[in-house]
Image 1 (cartoon, rainbow, N blue to C red):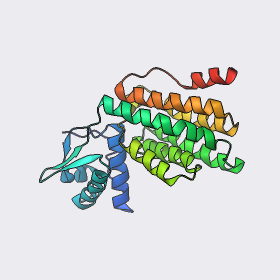
Image 2: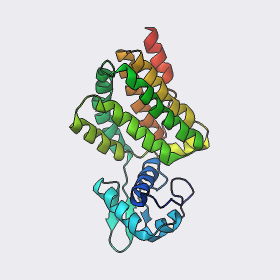
Image 3: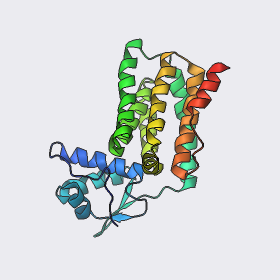
Length: 235
């Protein structure tokens, strides 16, 4: 299958395996590498402008995360996550993330908010640049950092695994329609809520954020969650 330009572009030599792994994970999560499609290491390597070895190594790492499966003598097939599976994953995340992020809102040191805002801005910058690899990586790091304030390593690992099983195939179309930046800026709004210690609004915002992402994946997008948070603040 032909591969369009996006996360899959020539890479610099430094930290090559990690860069390949990061780019492939982002391409899978964004839907640039299509679920169910078979990809060979040599063809991906040619697109990256590297040898096949770091691509194979990265794909084997992704197989351990259940993002791809190995097809002997052919390559790697991107794991399919259907709408029912996504609904189940999102339901679990709704049980875990909103209450924890709300709970840690009062625990975050005031001096940490500048760093959190920079992390949220990296998500926006990735969207502005049309760089889905940067967007997805920054988004992942931001949300896991928030959960990190709970001090619960098992929770963080579990959510990281659940996030990895999500396919945000709506990102590319959002980028094409110029809507990805608005979605990215929701993370800055979340930091604003947390810095003001608005615990209840944070919880509502997180629930709507997860629903919003789920709708983007399945094509059921229903609008901006910022309006919901604003209504909640006015109650």
